Amino acid sequence: MFIHGDDDHDLGHTVAGWSGAGVATLGFGLCGLAMVAGSGPLALVGAAVLALALLITWALHLAGWGKPSGPRPVAQWGWRVRDVTARDGHGDCLGCRLAGRRTSRPQVAERPAETAVADA
Image (tube, rainbow, N blue to C red; front, top):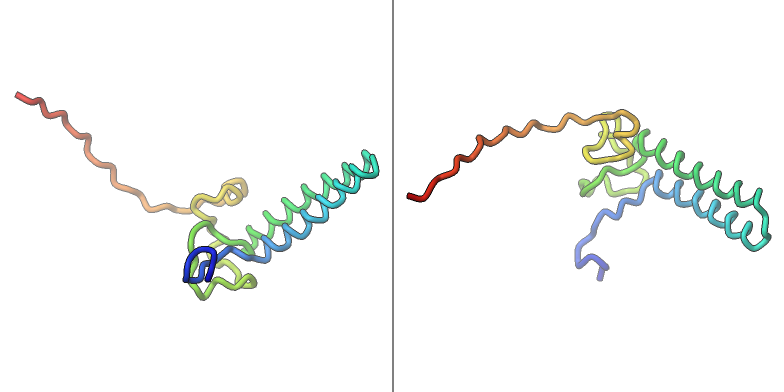
């Protein structure tokens, strides 16, 4: 039995996610070692590695090795499957917006203003 019920779900395992998590783990390990050793320079190196993890994950996401928000088709659940929509940007993705990638969202027709009906 799966944690989310009886059916499979896309949990978002991607190259960008795994790479960023791996580099961030190294950065946290260096920060922890710096705390034990009482080394300020090592703490700064650990913090720099954490910043590098963020940049690596973001760059891989923009290159199509990440995952857009929301469900994906079953054929794209593999972690080594590139996202073909990354070039245009993802709808509500902060990383895509920071990179200047705007998606063309369908325009929603505005509803006419509702008129107040006075009870007589």
